[in-house]
Length: 100
Image (cartoon, rainbow, N blue to C red; front, side):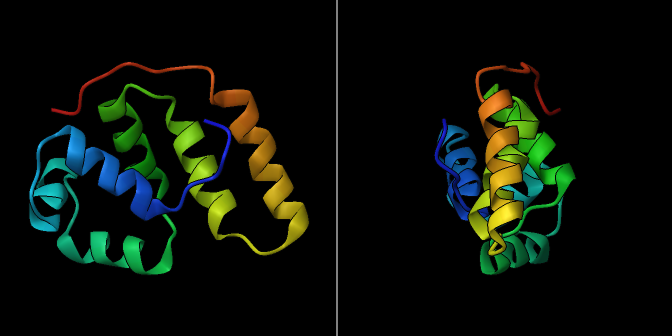
């Protein structure tokens, strides 16, 4: 993964992987409110907590998830470059875990 992806992309990946059929189910799986899911889809930004949970569920490094969604929503070139560098460094590492 080297291309930045918005928060919706990551939320959709979890939805698909977990066999969920609604944002309500996704919110329950991530232990957040449905409003939080809607906000993340609408603004394209993701909280660090949600990025960590998504990383665990997908078996990926949560920092790569956070960097990917942050780079996708940023507009300042220097900030985009920062997040792209973080993404490059951490996209090859994984953190396996399970959100209970």
